[in-house]
Image 1 (spheres, helix red, strand yellow):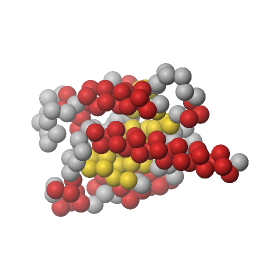
Image 2 (cartoon, one colour):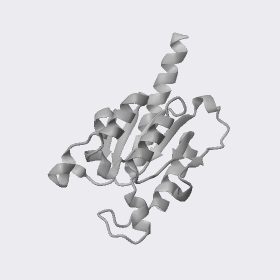
Image 3 (cartoon, rainbow, N blue to C red):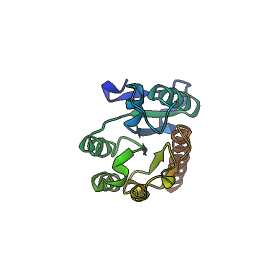
Length: 173
């Protein structure tokens, strides 16, 4: 699925698109590696399981989710910048780039979109070098150690934030 790099999950329950939050989801590359048979700390999880979870969440919550995955830092920066003016928020798990990428930090700051950083594992209980999150410095929330459910939590958080922004916009008009 991610060979195409972009997949739209659209709900069809009759709600107006005006009220639909449009979110960009950038899951970690490790999920693709698990499906290729590589061992990791997150055994039993897969990209397919995550996509099913997100499709269900999109359907139930009236959210449009665009999926993008790459293990190239510049591609991630490009997709974050692409989201400006097109998406209402970003769910991101930059994996190892969490601890090294000032470029992803700068991209997240430049688009001024609410972003939630998600980590499947509890990075606080891992190596010392994983205690710094550059991406997290530009995110309004970080969810760690909740497994794939953390992605759903991030989507629900951003949906609620989008609803508040839309409500405030209506009141100021």
